[in-house]
Structures are given as C-alpha cells and as structure tokens.
Length: 375
Image 1 (tube, helix red, strand yellow):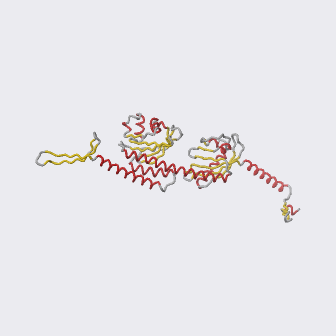
Image 2 (cartoon, rainbow, N blue to C red; image 1 turned 45 degrees about the vertical axis):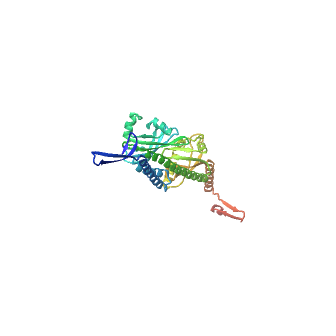
C-alpha cells in the first residue's frame, strides 16, 4: 500500500484477534525494498532497450536509415505516437528542420522546415537553456497560449517530452516524443529519452562524418581528374549551390561560404547550355555514373569563357551532387583554330587541284595522295 502524504510504501497484514471482536493490523514499511525493486526493473528495462537499440543500429551506415531504425525502437519502447528531432536550420534557431524518426496513428506528418515561432519562442528558449520540457496534457498546461493548444490538438499532440542536446555550449538539436493522449511521464522514462537522444545523435553524427569523408574523398578524386580546379556542391531539391573561391571566380562572383540560388548560375548560361546541363545530369543520375560536360558563360564579368564541369550524385542521396569545374576557354580556342585550319586545307585541296604529301627524312620515303601521284 502506498501512502501519499508520507511517500512511503507499506506491506499491510490484517487478522482477527481470537476471543475479541477486533482485528489486528500490522504495517511493515517496505519503502526501501519497493524502491530497490523498481530501480532494478527500470535498470533491466533500460539495459534491454539500449541493447535492442544497439543491435538495430550496428549494421547500418547511412544517417537516414539510422534515424529510422532508432525511431522505431524508441517509439515502440515508449508506446508513443511520434518521435522526431528538431534541428537548427539557419544557425540562429529562427527556422527549424523536423526530422521524423517514428510516427504511428498521427493526423499529419511534421517533417520539413518550419519557422521557430510555430513551436513557440519560449519553448526554444527553454531548450537553449538546456532544460527539458515535460507536458502531461497540453490542453491544461498554462505555459501554452490558446492558439498553441489548438494547433497541438489538431496535430494529435497532447502529451510530450522534449530533450535538448547541448554541444560545446550550443543547442544543436532536440529529441521530441509525443502522445495523442495525456501521459504521466515516469522519471525512468525521461532518463531513457535523454540517453536515447545522446546515443541516437552520436550514431547519426558518426554516420554523417563518415558520409562527409566519403564525399570529400570522391570530390578529391574528381578534382584530380579535372585538374584540381573549383569545387562545388549542388542540392537539386533546394536548388542551392555551394562553391569554393575558385569555382565562384569562374562565374565572376566574390568568395563566399553562403549557399547560392541555382538561378545565379543559370542566368549566366545560354538557354541551350542550361538545358543541356540538365539532360546530362539527369542521365548520369539515372545511370549512377559521373557526369561531364562543357558550357559557355554568356552573361556577367566572365562572359565569353567556357567551363567544363564534372561530378556525380551522392551515393545515398541522388539529389545532392558534388564535383569540380575548370576553365577550358584556351583549349576550346585551340580546338576551334585547328578545326578552322583543317577546314581551310580541305577547301584548298578540293577546289585548287592541290595535293598533299609527307616526307619521312629518317627513312627517306614519301607518301602522297592521288593528286600528287597524278602530277
């Protein structure tokens, strides 16, 4: 029996007193034993969960598949309706990116980019201060504005827990789990969520680092083939391009670590060049191969230059391309001059009855065409 005013647990035994119209009741305080047994159960449950999580993540390498597997294990363990990470989208926590880990019986998905105000500025401030957010029932929680409660109800969010991840003093992400009904969150559940947040993030971070290394190595291999010129990364889905200083200089743009809209570059191409680039990239992605093409810059400070661009799609994300670009203007001019020279020679030979011959001075032999032989 649990006695709330004293926060104690008792084992109660009652028995009639022989010869008397009475009952004897004995209270045995078993609080410490009960707490020890509960702690043992919680520890065993925690260890079983961590083992299951570790087994699920061990064979996986990609960040997305790690998140999906970890979310499934966590969601099923806690019997929640939704689990996701909230990540900073703009380094200011003014826009956030929701990465879904687990969803079950929800009204609509949350994945994607959202303004931070949609979560509530006070909530972001709590997380940035390193404090977790525990909500039993959002409908009865005075911290939420009425409009926020309406939004949460529409999304089937009643109970929730948010655990911030602070790295080097900065908020990098928040693990959130949600339920569609009120939930009295137990302390061992909150500790499990906190540990899961750290472990899942560490696994994803390692996978991202390994993926970035593979991309870097692939980019270096492409750069070696292409002469080590300007390097770039192109997000097809968001239509954004990052380029190093050499790449930007080819387009007449100043050095910058910012992402640039694709239109900044396509506006400096001819329509035909932009269309050809799209065709080459599409075919290469479908075939899983590197792409290689040339195009002319027709607008801007470097108009009149020809560039060659080589690259390939990221192994597990065909919408992310990386590669190198280098100036081939002089080579194009030499090739054009050679073609013009060859064309003039053919015209002269065809129209003037002229012949061509070669003399190998080492062997003192001459080779001649039919015109020279007739002469």
